[in-house]
Image (cartoon, rainbow, N blue to C red):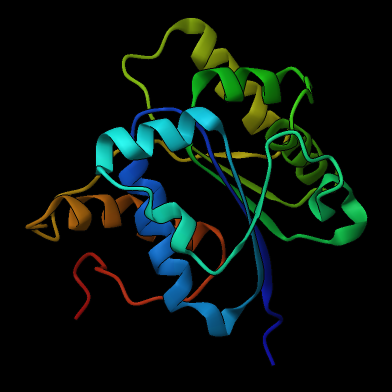
Amino acid sequence: MVKKKKIIVSITGASGAIYAKVLLDTLLNLSSQIEKVGVVMSDNAKEVWRFELGNEEYDNYPFTFYQKMDFNAPFASGSAKYDTMIIIPCSMGTLGRIAHGISNDLISRAADVILKERRKLIAVVRDTPFSLIHINNMKAVTEAGGIICPANPSFYSIPKTIEEVAQTVVSRVIDLAGLESESYRWNEE
């Protein structure tokens, strides 16, 4: 029997709310592989979601939501044994705080816990172009054991909608998280 995953999803205020939405939708469809999903969404993330997606549907997901400053959330400690943390989209400010060990909110604290426990941190960075500071922060997080997964969609699956474009990134994130899902595979039928 495969052990079910305990996943933290952190949504920051970077542009790209569609990636977070598609990830949450995908996690719903993979619920048989998941024990728990804890979500932390910054105030800026909610504002960007409303602006980019035109709704507040983030409130409709059946996951447990935690406030950005709730250090009583279970994944603020390694003892809760969450397997994976996905930050999607990951702002450069959040990445910088993680890279330098500044745990001033639940997102950065959870990332610190995931890294110190040698578990899986996936940062879906969404910015362009990158400054040298951004690149050095990505290097630091990678050296600490994190995975930088830029929100760079692929097009060989011939996506037709913005959701399908976002799904090309989310499918990679799902693979990185160790979950099994049906998605386009290059030259596989």
